[in-house]
Length: 437
Image 1 (tube, rainbow, N blue to C red):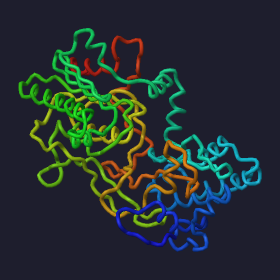
Image 2 (image 1 turned 30 degrees about the vertical axis):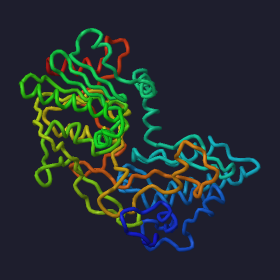
Image 3 (image 1 turned 135 degrees about the vertical axis):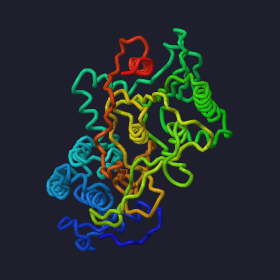
Image 4 (image 1 turned 90 degrees about the vertical axis):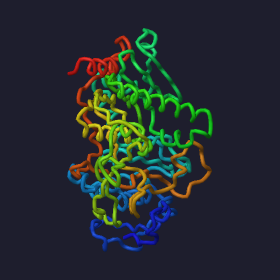
């Protein structure tokens, strides 16, 4: 059992791990954790078996969707019973003179973690024999998506595009189909000749760019781009000439939830809170203790709408997504599905919903270990032999259901077609707006 040392909002990874106690037997029972099994980093660094025990216990104490995993057939105790002997065998086979290969260590952990559904979950490992971090980050949901992507030619192409593809309006501009195109830091705004307005969002960091727009030229250019998009929509809407809006979230891995106010929140009114300044999108819950099934009550998950003067846009709003539209992109899709005038085109999204930062209340959930292992630069020494990036709370939809790992199904499935003139997903969005279904 973890002794509660700090109940403030910010509970550090060090406190979380050094106060978690581990015992495999009766792990659902808070009273079952024996004090002699307290995790300490020296012990976790002593053998691969102890490293696995520490990771298993850290997950047991801090992961926020064990009920969902159980509903999907995962038995976390069985994972312990199955994999502890495997890590003991690795200890018998390898040592500091004959180090365990990074690939063997990574494959064994991936096999143990691969059925976990939280899309944000990732793990970085230290090879305790070499003292070096392994190059591979264990991301169960990414592994599943890649495996699914190579099952068909079309999906394989989609995965290649995840690595290399960036949407562009060059074809349409070159063909004289655009009134205006503006690009800044991979953001793209464009207005078609028939008053369909496009916005490409490569990642959600608009709030910071706009809030700090006076700091440098790059931020100023992003702000001007967004402002041009917003003003164009409002002006055309006032003139009753706005035909539709396309928001391109393909390969957008997420970011700041506050960005909602500058995207869908700039096109709609609020429906929640004082003066209706927010949209009620779902719910969230955190862990209320270190027992596996200790959860807080569900609280409303809301996103702010734009507080500047703006109209409620009723023309078609099209979202373009693919298998690697993740996190805040998926929250945006959930919100869009609550709108009567939205339509989502592309492929099922990544499947990562649970927030990484909980700013609402104290929580037992959260990342554990040494974050330096997740950094690009090499470190000479690490105080923990692992780092697990665990969401700080769980996201639930309006029906109060956990949906991690499943992704958002589009209203219309469309694969990328590189032989099309222009971008075939943009073409389909234009066709939908112009002609309907």
